[in-house]
Length: 250
Image 1 (cartoon, rainbow, N blue to C red):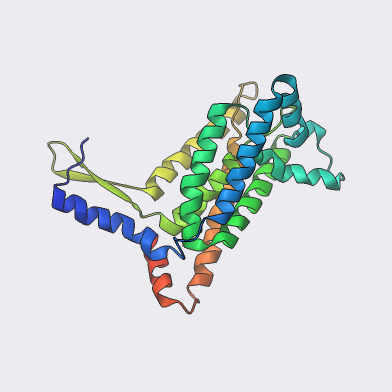
Image 2: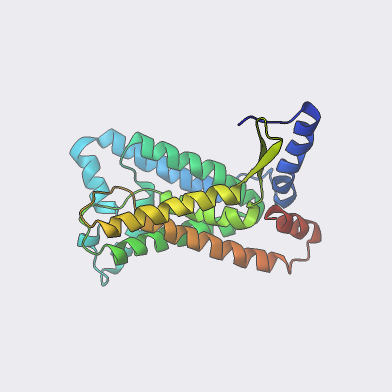
């Protein structure tokens, strides 16, 4: 497939593609505070693990990660691990993709819905994703680490806030166009998560290293919070922002 725009079409479509982000941005000149705070914590934890290295880094993940076999519902101080596990990562690649997702999707969401809503997405997404791990796999000895549950929460919110944002691609020699938007891409991602989780249940001995159940739980949290935010925004006294917000998901 090839991009089938001439220069004028490309300019016009680029304006249409970017308009939802511009119209729904609350204050794009203000730093994405919640997103940057989360990113800073992830970077700090990764630098610390790299500095101490080896067995000590593994011990760090075991202590502050979320291990089902070491979890006690009566251990109230231990509930902090429902947040701290998200700052830790098992490899440089794991960290790189998660932090890239945080910066791209998180900042875009924060400019649209504000730092309080994104802060709520981060905390609630981490907690619910972590709880899903404890409930579905209560005897898993390996620690759950990483911010992909929060990333899935961002995905869910993005489907509601700006699911219609995307591009059109022309199929060669057919004259037909294929519309690719965020909602369709994330629907494919969601389908893949469900398939992988189904395969884990279908073959209990099958090795796995990705917490697909946590992704699904986070995605559901993101959709729910974004729908609540959109409903509240519809009653806002700022009509210009409301119109742009509603149009972004069309």
